[in-house]
Image (cartoon, rainbow, N blue to C red; front, side, top):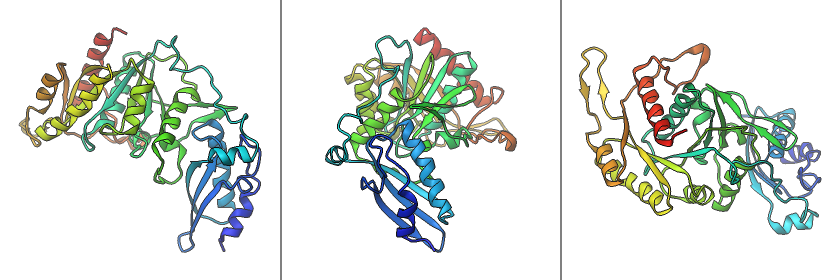
Length: 354
């Protein structure tokens, strides 16, 4: 039978990688919840540092240990030890961020492109994964960060069922369709919710740049959370010279809300590359007629207000599903919608000049 005592006992041998002490000894086991009837255990673990390669090692060890104790499934969330706790366990010097080659360095030639929107539900992540893939198909070296920390969906959309590999202190991103991918989804178990304060989100994003071995990239696409919250503010600070694409639907209200994201880009001196109007219409396969389900003109009005161009209109549609190579949101190059993404990618390359 599962019990807190049994779980704590199996966690005693797992050490905080920076403090070199058991996570039980450091007080890092913040929460244990057991659903005996389902064989499910939920844990909250605090470490001296989060979002690192070492965290992924701890994550794997914790899951293996708890399942070895009899759990069928494990939900795992990470928190960070307080400064006082770190000092108490002798970690004042050894827990500083270990900086490697960073995409944020002045010598980096990577073009950062933020995909943003004013509200959720407009298909921003679908645009992100298909645009990144289209750029890769054009021969570009492309990375993709799923920066939608609370609503991460990129791994599922791209059919990614593996995790990044870890060597020493370095995380190597997963590659799919020629795109190197890193996501918050790789750092949680069993689709557990992420409940973090703003400053911790900033640290996680910073580690995505500094702890991940991206190699040479022409473009790094960042799928942002909707709106203008903490993550968007942090990224605007981290990436002072990035470019943005605003995603909206044709509906007037969606375009009105999206204008806020555009205004934020302008205020922070980010270059707006253009607007993509998603869910622009539905085209019948039988008659070829277009039905404008969500109205018309939202993308044009937004582009005009932001003094930029409408990069493309993406209709409502569904990719062909390949059960042997499952990727539920990815369009092939010969799909009508896939062709639109290829056109947008070519226009993007022209505008950026890379």
